[in-house]
Length: 279
Length: 187
Ligand SMILES: C[S@@+](CC[C@H](N)C(=O)[O-])C[C@H]1O[C@@H](n2cnc3c(N)ncnc32)[C@H](O)[C@@H]1O
Image (cartoon, rainbow over all chains, first blue to last red; front, side, top):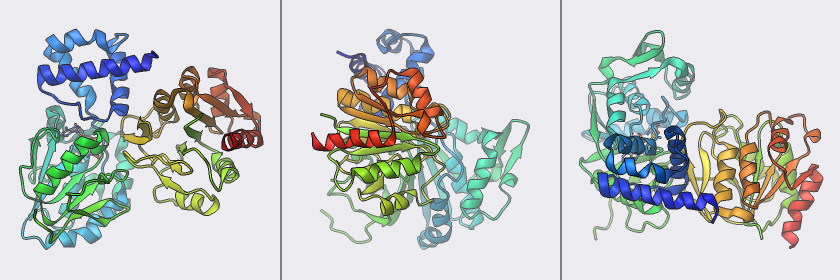
């Protein structure tokens, strides 16, 4: 048996350990990218294979946490995919404003760049008083990081460019306090945001929403888990509410019970049917 | 019998890839996956351009999409493309590898681990060494490795890096690569 297939077995063993011992169920995650992340976990641990990590993952909470952290990826950017933000700014905002109240669920906060992009945009279009942002993540460390709202300065130029391409007319830098190495989001953008731990693999809808943003989270899930998540979103969304996915993500093809219709296909906006058959 | 054809390139590879794909049209028995790290081309019309000049259908791969023969899939910019299981893509937004995303190395390794000897991998041209590690994995799992002769391109760093790292099956001109890939069609 080639080595890489032995690694596949080791990954299943580790997932079983995290699930049965610590209650973290990653068994529904897509294996291809998980395998890559497990390989870097092994590299960082200085071991030569995953099964040598198993005893400490089973008995030592810190080793388990390291493995759990290695599974979630916080990569994010401000105003990533500018055309999507441009669309929210110029087209979707009006639709959202027609709801009497706007609950926005932003799923998978990473280090918060997407969350504050949204807060900035709502501010600029004057919806910040009416809209409430609830951001969730499985990883508490990421939620805390996002709450603080601080990032290394090295990406500032790219983020400013994204902001401008997304139709932003203001001074992007003015939304932050800067020191030599970091930018800190100004406090006024934090007040509209709630940070809540929520695991898409386990937890249910907890809020009625008018807009759900879930980008670059579903790619880490296998097909069954993706379907579960769509059911959670469908339940959470008010009729006529919107769902935004990442630009390379889509609704699972064979989901017959789902009333989420394509709304803007290239940018991946979906909408929950305004009328529909109740079963 | 091969099940998937992967083509990796960076700088200088667009015209080469067009020529190659045209020679394989109008019907090719394998799915063709193109991995390139040109600047963000979501909105730059690269897919449209390829659709205009190539007779095979061309699209951007998306997450968990089923893979069809005779179709050309481009790795979406700013994501790593992977094979989830035979016949299905997956994406990830993990860190860049050798400063690029998508990474040819990442795709080739993932595809090689799924398809093993049934993978056909081609590296054309480019100004960095992405692809060399991936080709090593393809070779070690029994897949077929083909590299454009570095003398045939101005951007030889990428094919040269592969040749440094791997004892590839073929080092060939574009015409010979075309003939090799066409022979899949006939067999
Ligand atoms: C790549 S980041 C995406 C950040 C942001 N949405 C963006 O697109 O810029 C993926 C996020 O999903 C979170 N995540 C992974 N599994 C999750 C789960 N089961 N439930 C909730 N969040 C999860 C990770 O912790 C991580 O913060």
